[in-house]
Amino acid sequence: MQDRSIPLILAAAAFLAVLLWRVRPLLSPRQRQASREAIRQARSRIDSAVDEPARALALCDAADLAAKRIGGGASAKGLYLRALRSDGCSAELVGRAASGLAKRPRALEAVLWRHISSVPWTGKSGDAVRASLDTLRTLYEGPLRNAVRARALGHAREALDQPGGQNTVGSA
Image 1 (cartoon, rainbow, N blue to C red):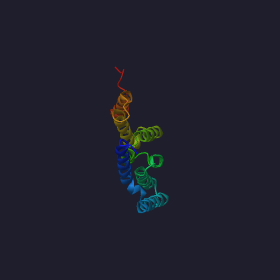
Image 2 (image 1 turned 90 degrees about the vertical axis):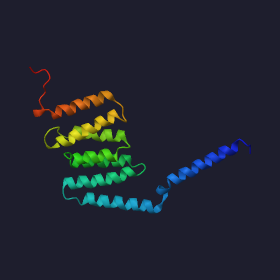
Image 3 (image 1 turned 60 degrees about the vertical axis):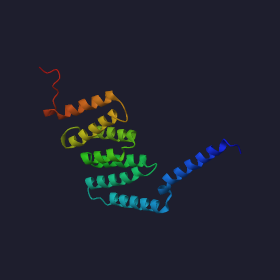
């Protein structure tokens, strides 16, 4: 063995030690069992929900658990979509989806676009649509970096806030 390879071996060993230390909670059987049990409880709450808002909250709880797991992004996205389909008029659900998928901006973007395309923008779902538009604009101003879309969503939000929802452009 050459003298130059000793620091490389030490660096590789240190890297592996740090890597194992960081994934240590994921390797614990007790942690995995607790996670499985929490998911089972959340799914039983979904099945036993008596009305759509309660079902949507149970779906959000399950999605929050899935979002914390490694590789649980697709499952969390699907659960948030189901929650928003169950109760599309709740701005609280939009906020929970935004906080749960904050580390996955593309998944959050897809959930929010599907939400605003599936509910009417006026009436009782107006607050949820406003929350979705604000969150999308924040995404495009921040991690997704698309200034044109951010401005367009800002204009859509302003148009919703106008009294009567009437267009004032071009009227004389």
